[in-house]
Length: 54
Image (cartoon, rainbow, N blue to C red; front, side):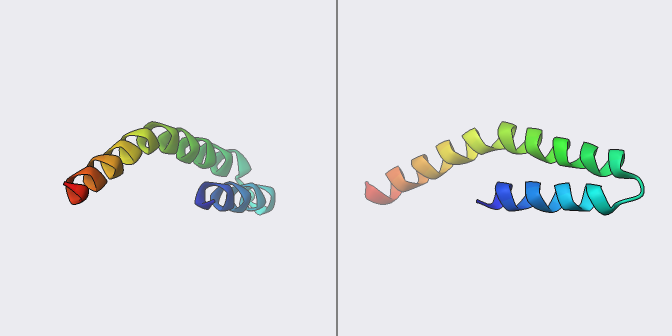
């Protein structure tokens, strides 16, 4: 959900910004970095739950 809100916010900001390509680039960078980090964060949470169960 947070990624959706961030995408919407950056879209509106890029429409209102004078230097909209820079804001659009920031949005693309945020989306790509999220896609790279999210799987490892999910795996880390799964491992942490496993330790708590054991």
